[in-house]
Image (cartoon, rainbow, N blue to C red; front, side, top):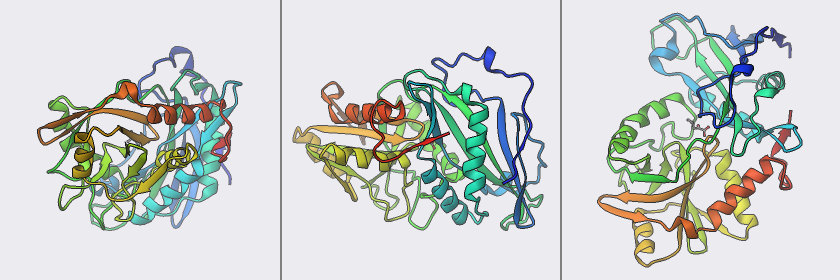
Length: 350
Ligand code: COI
């Protein structure tokens, strides 16, 4: 694949402190851009990071034909750069594209484009604890038309953002029973931009009440847990780990979710993927069972949940005595930093 490369003459890196850098606010020197026109991908270019010039009538702005991915690159302790499980994100990207009636992005464009871009901006990968280079591939429709139909033209891009931890504290979560994130037959399994916009109303309300995020419940009975903010959710109750199953198409097939299941199995823990009701969680809490609750996601990695507020019942968890979630987090971090054997071949060398 022919990728034109046009490098910047003045890097912003000298004026950027990569330590304790907030999530998603700073971007590297370059970006990848490609256009889909007349049924083929063209104008593939890595160029200096810059604003786009777009028409106010492009379809994406009006009807939300827009999808994205989140991936992370790391530098191991000996300075080599790796991307974590990018092939899984690539596959999911095209699943999202299909659901949103957008073209498939060829593997070569997605993977080689990303690899070349990161190789150019490799010095932007922070090497501090819990830091990484967040990779954001995305695609949106570009037809200048406000009629409602799938666009003929699209833009695929990759931008890179050096980042520190997404959350710095353990989380307080509000269990949402009125608003929903996704419904069976909808787009919950896709990484569609609209899923995130639609979540903001309930999330803002929870934040005003002093919580960090919402725990979404099912759309019909508001009884079964779904996702937590933009994370998948796991509950460990005594020795059993439970996470909602993907069968209804309402839950994102998280790459960190899959990784967590694999590592928990390696720890000898059984992970049940099945419906989990709030009643089951409350019963376990009232019976004094050992409960660990955590969210998983590319941006957050493993995030510990210290409180769940359900109706007016607050469940506070004894996070200082948890063993499993912190161990999972450190195993995952150690694999990414090259300190633990990568036995599942998750690290993809740049
Ligand atoms: C990710 O984990 O990459 C996400 O999609 C969350 C993001 C919307 C901040």
